[in-house]
Amino acid sequence: MLRIGWRGVKLSRRVTNAAVSAQTQRRYSTECSLFGLLFDIDGVLVRGRTPIPAAKQCFRNLVDGDGKYRVPVVFVTNAGNSLRETKAEQLSHLLEVEVSPDQVVLSHSPLRVFTQFHDLCVLVSGQGPVVEVAHNVGFKNVVTIDMLREANPLLDVVDHNRRPKDLIPPSMDLPPIDAVVLFGEPIRWETNLQLITDVLLTNGRPGNPVTSLHYPHIPVLACNMDLLWMAEAKNPRFGHGMFLVCLESIYKKITGCELKYEALIGKPSVVTYNYAELLIRKQAEKLGWTRPVERLYAIGDNPMADIYGANLYNRYLKAMHRTRVQAQGSSSSQVPGDQQCEASDDAKGSGRVMVGGSFDHRLPEGCSSILVCTGVYNRDHQDLPSDPEQTVTEQRIFHGHRDFRFDPSLTQPSFIVHDVRDGVELVFQREGWSLQ
Image 1 (cartoon, helix red, strand yellow):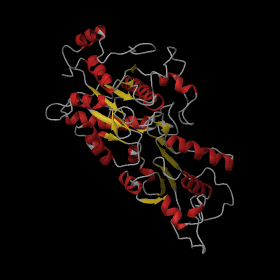
Image 2 (cartoon, helix red, strand yellow):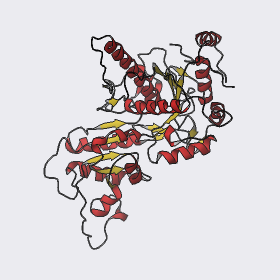
Image 3 (cartoon, helix red, strand yellow):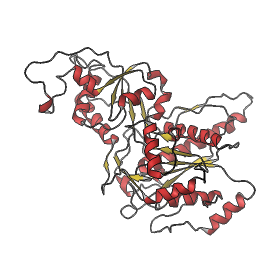
Image 4 (tube, helix red, strand yellow):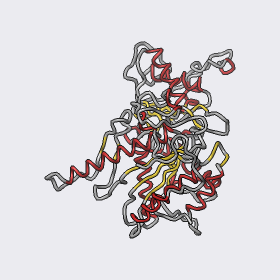
C-alpha cells in the first residue's frame, strides 16, 4: 500500500505523485471507481465551535452547483451528547453545505441495533438531552442521574452545598434499574461516579444497603471511548474515555473485580464503522449509483480512535470477503442472508455486528485510513515511526480502552496529510476523479 507523508516528508497543498496519478487514470479510464468518505468532526472539520479553514473549501468542492454531494459522505464522530438532527444542523451551518441527519453517526447511534435492551429500565449518564437521545435510539424506560439523586437525596453528598439541610427528605420509589447506558462525559463527575457505583453495587436498587457483592453486575453499555479530544485549547481535553477510566478504577478498588461492559461502541469499535457503511450504502442509492461502493476512506485526527478503528474495520472487511469466497466455493448453493462476524480485535461483543442484506450486496473491498495534523495528532510534535511494530509517539503510553487488545500496527495510517482538504484531494486523485 502506498504511504504518503511519513517522518520528514512535507506535503504540499496539492498531492502531486505523478506515478499514482498515471496509474489511477489508466485503471479507471473506462469506468469511474466508486468510493465513499467517512469524516471525523472534532480536529478534522472543527476545533470546538470554530471551523478549520480547509474544511469549508473542501466541502465546496464535494458538492455540485445544486448542493448535491458528488460521492457518499458520512460524518462519524464520538460525540454523543446531542441528537443527530442537532449535529447535522450544526455541520450545515459550519461547513455551509446541507448535511442530513442520515449522514451523521454519533457514538450512540449503533445502540439502535441493541434491541434486547430497549424494553429494560436503564440509567443513562451524560449531558445534554439524554432522555431524548435515549428514546431516539430505542430505549423506552429511562432514569437519569438527576432523577436518581432526587429520589434518593442522601446519595449525593460529595458537594457539601448539595447535602440535605435540616430535615432528611424521604426517598421516592423508582423502578429497579436493569442496565446502565453511558452516553458521554457528564458535567458533575463525582455525582455520576458515586451514583453509578451505587447502582452496580446494589444490583440496580441504589436505595438499598449493600449486603453482598452482586457479580457479574447489571449490564453496562458505554459509548465513546476517547481518552482525549481536541477543542480550541492548545492541548487535548479529557474525553469520555477518561471518565470510564475513573469508573473502572473506582469499581475495582471497592470490589476487587473488573468492571464489565456488555458493549463498547463508538470509534474504534467495528460496529460503528459497520453502521456507517450502511449509511454510505443508502447515500449511494440516493445518488443513483447502481454498482456497490468499492472502497471507503476514513479521515480522522486521532491515531487511537480514527486510525485504529478504520484499520480494524479494514481487517474486518478483508475477513468478510474471505468468508464470502469460501462460502461461494462450498458445495452449498445457499448462502445465509444475514452474516455475523466476530472481530477478534474488538471488545466485548461490540464486534459482533449484523451485516444485513445478502451476499448479493458486496461490502467495500477495504477501508483506508487518512490522518490529518489539525487535531489530536500534530506532526510537529509527534513522529510516526517507520517500523510498523512500533507505535506512534503519542501511543508509547497506550491511550486506548482497557478492553481492546492493543495492536500498534493499527495506529499506522494508510496516509498522512496536513488537513482534510489535502486528504480529499489525495482520495480523488487516487480514484481518478476530478475535484473541479
